[in-house]
Length: 610
Image: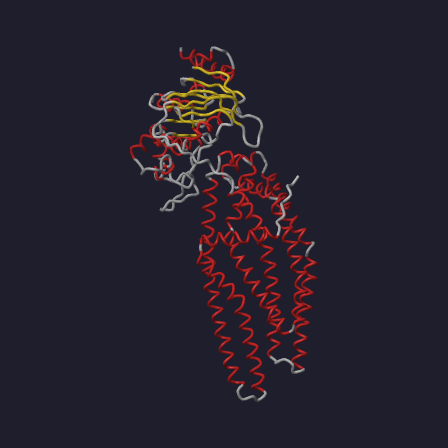
């Protein structure tokens, strides 16, 4: 069932608009004053120009009738009118630059704040659906914040135009002013109702649009097209995309259709009011109660007033959704960031100790980890094994400090990890996870250097990392060597395209990045699943022969696991066995069962070699 969208009150809308104005002022204060002055110029100058144009018409009529001084007045009014027109044209040209400048300043400030906040959240938020929904809405708002401010400025301009027009009409005739106000109310009412419905529809279909984005992303990725065709799901996904698009767009169009005749009726009422005003002034001119230029003046005043109303309603109609998104943006920005921690690590800890660590996600009751205890000594090689879903990756995130235990604690020597600044802990860590980052926009060299960007690039460390990851041979063969882009969509300065890497080559490149970091503590989460067994054995033999480093490995390959000093076997969030390979294999327990087929295969190979 779709979640009902919360309705904004008028007070919330005013508060939202005020927030837009304040945020804009903080980012570009001078631009706000210029835009406010511009709203006055754009709103009032056309009416002033109309007034002098009407005076010109009256003076011309008087001159035609033989009044001697009327001709000079007509020329004077023409010059004033022309000057005002030039001023308005000049302002419109200047305003285009100001709009671009303001949008740049505001969009940059808002999006920078949003991305910085997103990357500072407590880590569990990245697994939380509510956070994902808020981020989608916040990003939608941030991407168009500058245009929201433009809309706000246009609303102010339109209100000034409408108000000035109504005041001018009241000066001509109070009852004409009253008729004009009555005529514009239905249009405002129906447009506001439509705006509310559109906002509700947008909010209720966030997941629909997200599904469309995901489908389009999967359909347009080169690496997924082969499977989509082989499995014959292309047509299915295209149809699903159409259905979701119809749900989002066609439903909106359908309910908007309900407002068409209501709005036409409101427009007809406005037209009657305009005709009544013009007939009134024509009668007044015929009876010589008003000068002839008054017809032009009234016609322009009514037109400007109605145009101002229409513009206000249109802008409100467009901005109402943005104001709703502003509150979602604010809710997202109010999400708590990671806790500030006072302690700084000044040296590598000799021991990493987990004491009865349990963990469950904030929105879930089931424990992912249940009373896990272990001690990892400096220079020790640890393997964590278990079936998928046993809690291995969550345990690694606990050790990294990305998650805080629900119960228990993690100690770095005598320091509780919960009190340690994460940056001071992470500088001792090199982490390669199964879903490692592919910096597709960068060269192979940059992909490796991203392992440690805090210091200038080191050729010595670079060469050593290539050798340890066995990545040098295939990278040297690329057209531009180590400076080759590793994505076919990137283009070099000579016009040649980048090169796509295989899964195994990407893993070697990611390993090289990890080795380039040269950290004393290395954590590997299924790091070599796409690398052949012989290459993996060589890489790990070199890695595990280095007793100056602490190594924590998650792997399903026996050849990697059996070399560890201590193996922890996990099941359903608990450690069910621990010890060396020989010790726990003798138990014939869960560890033996998990690796039984690989053990038999190893025995067969050994017997064949004999």
